[in-house]
Structures are given as structure tokens and as C-alpha cells.
Length: 243
Ligand code: SF4
Image 1 (cartoon, rainbow, N blue to C red):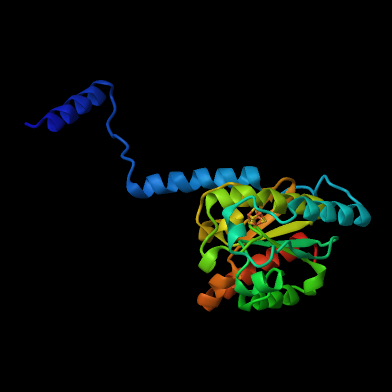
Image 2: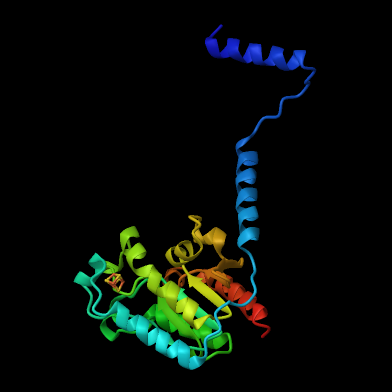
């Protein structure tokens, strides 16, 4: 008999002596369910929130955003500064009810210095309009403000250097809901390293602002069949806004 078999025999004899007739076995499926349960519990603790604690007037918001833009200046805080043409600060209404936060500028955005103006941006604009808003009614920004080379994902040091700015913008604008677009934006804002497919469709919280993760428009350009899922998420946002 091998050592393992002997060990099992000893354990079984022990349980028998304790009067235990059945030994529960944690199957892979059970273990996965336990993991999902843990995630669900964490979601609950992040879930739903009252509207933001920040109550700045429009004038105060405007000067706070101007001051933040000045603070960023000709930023060299991370290596993305090397290849950029423009810093893409973000744009939209300072009194926006919804703030959309993506990952980072692409080529068109880098050239124009404006967020979401390329093909993915056009899709985002369509979504905004389908939700009953004009693009200028909402606020749009990104986790990093300079274009990553060849549209690669922003790296951790770049996210750490730049994300305090978009966090500050969200605090100043204090929207009723944030919609995070894609994995990087969502994971950065809520601090959970879970795939976007599992995160989307449920409310989380950024500071005291409800946050709805959904797919990035670039993903939808590659996977148009998933557009209905984004529309499902958008409807939850509208419901939350009482629209
Ligand atoms: S990505 Fe952000 S931190 Fe990096 S250089 Fe641009 S503005 Fe500065």
C-alpha cells in the first residue's frame, strides 16, 4: 500500500470512530460556486449608494476643473507623455448626471485632444443618444489621458500615475451615475480584478457614486452581437436615474 492510501485509510478510520457516515467532498463545481458566492457578497458590500457627498455649484465645479487642468500642465508624470500629441483631459457638462469613463485615448483622440471621437466614440455617442441624452449633456473621460503606443493597454505604473486625475474629475462633477467602459476602467475604479463579463450589469460604487460597468465600445465594434448587453446595462442606469 502506498503512503497516500495509508493516509486515506487512517483518515477514514478517524471519521468512522467519530461516527461520521459521509464525508463531504469539495468538487470543482462546488468550489467554483463558493468562489462566485464570495464575489456576490463583495458586490453587495459595494452596491448601491446615496448620491455624492460633494455639492459644488456649477461655478465652483468649473474653477475646480480648471485648477485641475492647470495642475496636470504639460504632464510628464508617466512614460505615455513621450509619444502623445495631446493630453485628452475629458469633456462634457460639468453638471452631468452621467459620467462615462473609458480606458485611454486612441489615435483620433490623441490628434484631436478630445475623448471618444473615433469609431468607438461614434458608437458611444449613439448609445448616449439612445439613452435620451445629447453627448454634451454627459461627461466623458478616460483612466489615462495620453495615448498608449499602438493602442496597447495602459500599464499599471501609467494607471497609477494618471488615474488620480479622473478620480478627482468624478468627485468634482459628482454625477448621479458613473458608467465605466471596459475592464481597465472598471477594475481601476472599483478595485476588483474580475473579468468585465462578470462585473457588467450590476451596480458597484466609486466613492459614494453608483457605478455601472459595461463593455467598452471598441469591444462592441469587434463583437456587435453583445450590443444588447450594453443596452441592458444602460437601461439599469436610466432606471437608477428615474428616467
Ligand atoms: S497619461 Fe496622465 S500621468 Fe501620464 S503623462 Fe499623460 S497626463 Fe501625465
